[in-house]
Image (cartoon, rainbow, N blue to C red; front, side, top):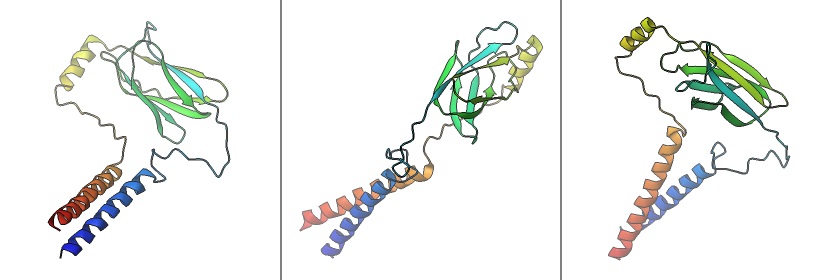
Length: 186
């Protein structure tokens, strides 16, 4: 019986280590830094986008709006809350991009404008505008927002990946504890 528990412990340790290794070196993992395409080294030139959000009437910078920048594959390449000044997004490749607003600054209408631009061979400057609400609109908006606000969660890692790492760690710990317990009783 003692040998069976010891061997089960060893198998659990090996399984845990293999699961961790699988997750560390998976093709879709962000931890794998050797993503070269069959020894072809392509020099990629990157560009910057300077993005401004301004008041439509005064051209002053607006703060507190949430903007999203997506590439032509609809992948988010930038998501931020505006501050006074220009927001710089670095390392953009050539291609088409779309800028949208998901949350307006306080006292302003949400911009329905979808700005599409293309980066070809130089950096790009993009300006989005918001219009101010009237006093009546501000009061109506505040009355509407007295219910609970939705809170967004930024999921940077998939649940499946996190769960498999947790299972791998638990399996390894269980295996080690079985081996240690069996050695102690021996």
